[in-house]
Image (cartoon, rainbow, N blue to C red; front, side, top):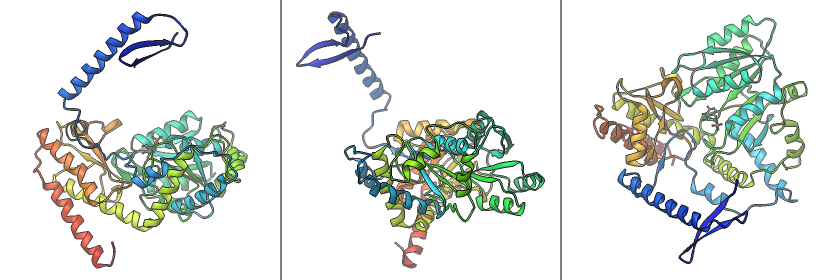
Length: 448
Ligand SMILES: Cc1ncc(COP(=O)(O)O)c(C=O)c1O
């Protein structure tokens, strides 16, 4: 195979062959074709209304909007990850990340991966083939986690839960009590199922484990909850907490950020699943001195530093309260539209993502596609078992009152365009009313 670089120089087209073949005329023809293709493509886009002035608004449940402060922090030169002063940057970062996980005794790992890599890191360092684990699946992501455990040869008891519901605490409690031989090695819980907008009660799972005096480890997927929803690693006795950079941390995708308890860390001595890239041992050996076992993504680490600064400056309690407010505004709009959420009960409503059910005969994914195409607002499609039955709005990360009205605005117009019985302005007005009232209450209480 040969590779060619085609370029236009001073008005004349030249081809440059890396292997030296003189095929000038052939490549001149090819470049003509290429230019014709590009022009045609542009025209099709303009005719199709895809080229729009203004910016695209991203309101999917991750990746989320990267705030300017973080973008500035990342607009830097590469740096020497073995420099003598690098640990002065990394060691405080690891320390401050513990505050986000609300852990004093846990250890934080940062892998250059997405959340899925964080899952794999937790499983492979701590468990062994044949280990019995208790899981449940009620959405695309909890299902993929089950699949990963199965692929690693674990003995998986996966409870199949209806989509729209969360983790069944009573069934977990029964199973744990019945396991008198304490054969279950780990209990898995997806804190926030992003596909359905369902949040589960991790504190209640810990209580069920303690009531059963069960020594299993508690693995929690907090990919779409950490840094947005209250998450208490130490208080809830979480042994493995997996998160990713592209949601509450407001960064691009690319870091798996994982919290591990002392108890879980000790298991790596006996865990038999193979690991290399995700080895905790290798990470610990290097991290203890402020370095990494392979080339770290230093620009992302600088961005993460800024993200942690922003979260701590706002204060975690304020971050959580803001997410609850934004989510409630979205839910007010959904109610005003006469629609419902995929999440079946209030106790399961997620404060980071809402999956909004569309009526029979209206493809929810078409609402998202229409909104993207005609209004330049990215809502999220629905996945897996509920594909087409809903569209999703991500309301997490760097978000304020006016920003959260944007996806509501786009959704409202799109639903109307698609023939749904929606009164224009109804959802927006309900959300505005709620946001104004709660803003005034906060101001009266001396808040910002
Ligand atoms: C709850 C949850 N878990 C896991 C993942 C997988 O993370 P990633 O896509 O970063 O690998 C996602 C992704 O959206 C998620 O929402």
